[in-house]
Length: 222
Image 1: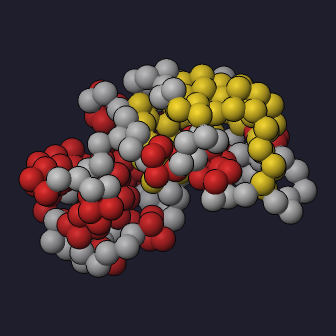
Image 2: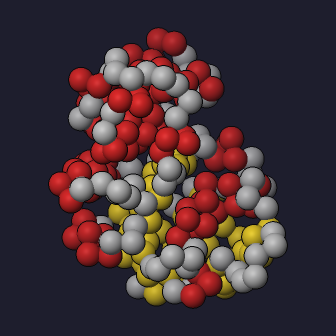
């Protein structure tokens, strides 16, 4: 599903590499955790899979990343988004709508999904994330855990094959953290490849099938 071949990346004006000589394989259907201290390249790793690095986040890029057979350098991010869904660390910055249902519809509109598919996709995303009662709620009135699930549901409605999540449990209480990971486990069982960056290594080891630890400048070990 995903292949990093000797990838090195340094953001413009950065003093050090975010990733250095990284070689990594993620198989279709895996549930992979990525951990490490701050500044070791966890977010950059996800952004590289989504094509945001280096198309939107500029810098010096060497090596190759392929996702589902597509080279991320040669493939526009909008094309990669048909396969890859990214939930960012700051979910509030990702929201574009006021109400929950409108947030999910926005993505479907942008991807040109046929209107007769909307209801099936919306209902499925709400059901899988366990947020059907939130369908007509105002996003800003939701709790942190509820917002995380709305962000995940908005990506699921697009039916990605690869789901990437950057610190999805940040600032959540322990029960909410576990709820998010239980949701991710069910999604993975349903056939979606999941990669989640998370500082809480113990949580990753409990739920993920494999955990990758990033060290200085994005070097990895398992």
